[in-house]
Length: 595
Image (spheres, rainbow, N blue to C red):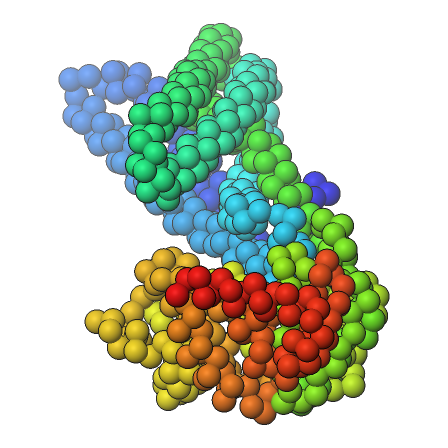
């Protein structure tokens, strides 16, 4: 229960639901016991009055006697019906308090996990796959809800029902009570073991189904490749193998499920037989009445489900504890990206790197080595280099996705660690290398940074990123849905939407992380001409492996294997004849070959 202790704060929060639910359970159990007592009275009434009825045979008194105990039976029947209705009403209240409480806790826990996810650094998402993150907030939380809902509800029901029924049964006849309840512990233990097998095989089926779903998803996503290589038959054979594995595991579960209800019914039948047998002996000995036998059979059936549920409840608690342990692992993961002073102010955009060193914590790659540069407000810097040189790492440090291992990154003279993280990022426009668009309209994707911006700003951002003409060609214009991850757009269109999204926020610092890699030279020049106007008045960082993107910047820094090997203006670096000149000549020659 140590792992489930995390939920105690929620149980305390909804304590009135829990208390009211317990009261309703007790009242419901009371009205479930009352009918058994009435049944005993009716049996005893019939037994005692039958002989009297026979004595008055052939007289008018027989008719009066019949009417008398028929009226009594009718009244008892109405009382039993009223008890059943009242029990149903309070069972409804019971579920409306405890089960509703479990849904509230499920809602709160999911929000807690999601909000915590939002605070975790980028390194956390590099270590954990998306499927696992989603599973913990959905499947694991659902299993935890079964503990705070049905498990608690049926647990309280079992406890209170036993406290109410067992003493009452013992007060009537201890021997009959012992024999009638004898099979119930065996029933509970049997259900526990059978349920454990069912849970184990259910988990195997879930894993098999997950693998099957993943296989199908990959097959459909890569259908173009499958058809291109004529591998349909091979893929179908692999699918059949996965399907057979799922079928085999499902049949194993069906076999165990087939044993479940016969086992319950057999042990319940044994309990009823013992009750009737021992009760009949008691009737002959004058220890109990026939009404007591009927009453005890009702009690046995009444206790059967709670006892059966005991094994089920135990299984639920075990599964919930395992799931909560998985949830706690992430909740106990704390972010190391915290603000030292929570500084909130409008940025001017003076960006400085002083002897910065950085090693990725998850891979151990030393990405930056003693990097220093200074960009004044309104200036622009281009960072170029080959793949793996450390260009994107600089963008990650400016947006504070990671913290440096050595040196200082400062903005407007203050260490970047001192800024409130949300305030800092809200004033930075970032166009990532890997474009991600949401399954929304183009308008909402551009306005993602600020949903309150005017349509005029959205239109201007689209025009500045050379996207407006493409949007006008779409039948629905800005209301065009881009599909999952922007699948309905071309690579260049997706990058331009991403650029429009960044500049629509009017950021103080603009970062273009190889943002023009998926556009042709003509579109690149169009965007760069627009960017020349956009970059005025704001600090701009252009990260690229293309010299054409870098030459518009006020200064250029060349990286190689995490080290700065050259820095200066475009013309100065060409005159030096170093690495930048070599890269420039290669790219110019390549462009000439293309044309």
